[in-house]
Image (cartoon, rainbow, N blue to C red; front, top):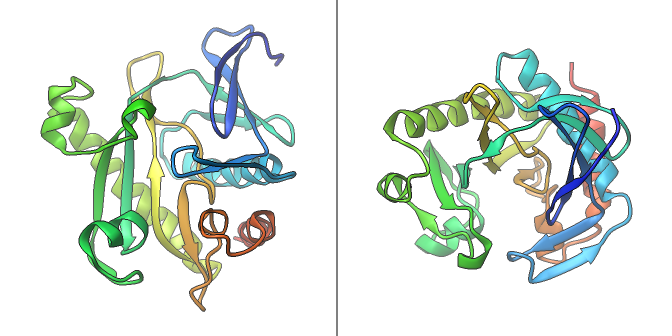
Length: 236
């Protein structure tokens, strides 16, 4: 499958059309960003690692009955994906207090939540992706009640699968961000990526194996991403 026209250039990926109107090619970049793009660096090898990690996760999700945009990995930095119309929501699920959640509510990081909490953020860089609730989602005509319920239910189902897989390789899934989109049949499916760029993973000692290493200046990002990839490759 050959790339044709660049249709979107994001912080972490470039999106190209193909000769098939229903598929696109996602090209993973070596760029790392934080704080909505305020902190930005080129990190050699990041794109290859994120593509490998995301491909492994999406393959497992597909095999477990989760509808995703992932078709196949076609090179070290490229994926073939179904074309979707992205729903402008960042869907965050939290298993443990961390990051902005801890700051917002003045609680320490690392507290297990009795029930996972699902949050919505309006995907809009100009507005700095504000935190919104179900009523805002409906006011903005992003999704209706049925679609909101489905997105939440699917996010919780994905969480249970991911938590189990990461636990098997000694990692604690703290939180993560998902994006969904409408496919050609107007069905809501999982899109974007799943990598340490958009989740928090801690090891048994509480060490960060995710983008917080870059955000907080804790070490070399590619070193920890390699650890995550190697652990995932050992998963049975």
